[in-house]
Amino acid sequence: MLRYYLVHAPARLRHYAELSGRAALRQWQGTLLLGLLVVGQATTIFMLPALLLVHLARGESLTGVIVLALFAGLYVLPQRPALRGGALAPFAATLPVTRLTRVLLDLTVLLAADALLLLELGLALSLGGLPALPGLLCLLVLVLLVQLLTLHLRLPHPRLIARRLPVPSMLKPNLQALAEHPAGTGGRLLVAIGLAALAVAAATAFQFDARAVSVAIGALALIGVVLADLYRVLYAAHAPIRVFIAALPLSPHHLLLRDLLTVLLFGSVPFLILVAWFGVFDPGSLAAFALLAIAYTGLLAALRWPVLRGGGLGAMFAAILAAGWAGSAIAMVLK
Amino acid sequence: MTLLFARDLAVAYDGRRIFSGVDLDLGPGVYALTGRNGTGKSTLLRLLAGAQRPAQGQISIAGHDLVRQPIAARRQLSYAPDENPAYPFMTGDDVLRLVAAAKSTAPGPVVDSLVAAFGLAPFLDERVDALSLGTQKKVLLAATWVGAPDVILLDEPSNGLDAPSRDALVARIGVDSARAVILFASHEAEFVADTGATVLALDSLARAA
Image 1: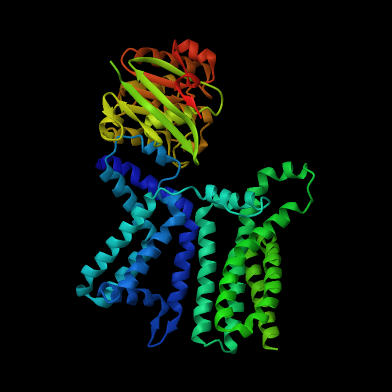
Image 2: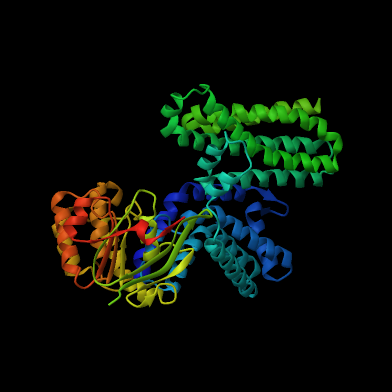
């Protein structure tokens, strides 16, 4: 079976790299950028996860271990189609290969997907020394085990979930189109929710003083940039049916409106998280959030232009637009 | 001698039952699965190949239960889906090597003869996504004969084949029909007739949903 492993593993890895290469590149760029940021006692943000892993390896926080396991599973969830081997997987399932070989192939791809975690484990080992090694190895085994289970969970395809969502029928085709890209769509939504959670944490740390709403506005601007990329996915998905739609008795702006509503639907999730949190702990800020809802809708609509028309500089134009929006919104709120 | 056995097979998608109650008991020979579009011919082949789990039922290949003895069963089984399952960057040669490695064997003289009959040799080092649909089909068909399987499942095998390759496939099926079960799904009546296959209408095999 070693021969089969040696033939199949490079193909699985290449398949994964081709599907997730750009996302992996963004992860590494982000990590390197974080490496430049320094917090307290000359420790870079880059080293914080390693410090956390050393802490967990010493068995000092069961909750932390559970959160790590949950995060490991969530990380794999949107990547399942790519990690499981794509179109070759059903065919490979018909070949006489042992379960052990199949598990080894899965682990090989998972280790590639977890390259950043491995780097952090290496750093954690350098920080914690050899005594931390057994604990770190246990964490790695736990993460891989959770990810293996997540990989083989029998879940309905995101397309079926999208079909069953209680949303207007006008939006269903778009949700199904986005469900065809579960990694990208799920990843963007997770990042958006993560940004909202960070803003909530920061606002709580600031005890909802004057800085809290500004932080929320900054987070909304970033969320807008992250979610605006959905316009690109939807635009590409419409390409084959654009001519067909044009021949139907629909408004010429039908697709535009549909895309806008879809992005607003996604954008409403992090926005509602912020509103709910501020509503509970700082009810006085709700008036500002009512105005922000209108401005945020405007931002999400405006971001369509740089994403679809900005060419290679689209991301930069979107960032400039969002930064300008955030600056204006903060100025309005402070006034 | 039963080589392909199935009892009470059923399949459902998204809670909707496609068919149920399919029984098969096939000895060496050629069998053509026919039926209207959407009745589940490809699905039945996927179930028999172990590429998809049935909602219920039992399958055995050359006396080996596909669930309890998967390795022994799959060693005697080959399956060529209708659509090319290989990664776009793989070459035809990669596909043959992958299947041969899984079966712990070499492609062998039968595969070599099919490669020659299909005129595949010049294309084996090219990426699969650079090949025409017919050539992709030929690669898959050649891979099907790796390891001299007892049960060969082919989904629309004549799709996209040129006339000489189609004739070569008919001849190959004829040679192996004495020792193996060759079950294929096809809409092409002429191909079914040329192989001398026993026609199995899926409608008559299954209790439709």
